[in-house]
Length: 81
Image (cartoon, rainbow, N blue to C red):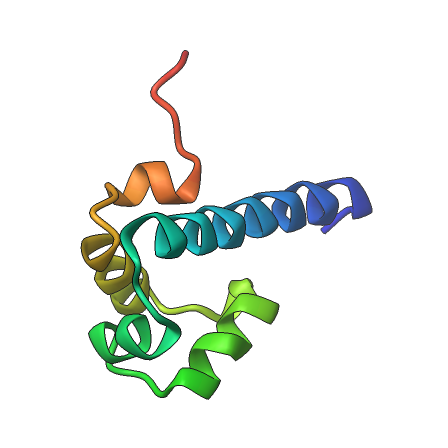
């Protein structure tokens, strides 16, 4: 994978983590609550924040549900053509 492509995906990952953290503040969801919803321990959730490429789909779905956010919005996917 080229450096430019890696940089692109790194920016997307960072944006996703920022969206999760912002939604946590907006909805008053703690790290412990979010980790519990995703069926992982809080330390694992922190690890996922630092290495978002390792997050599993089931964890993403649980996080999106807990934060009342559609998964495509969380991932930054748009329907623009």
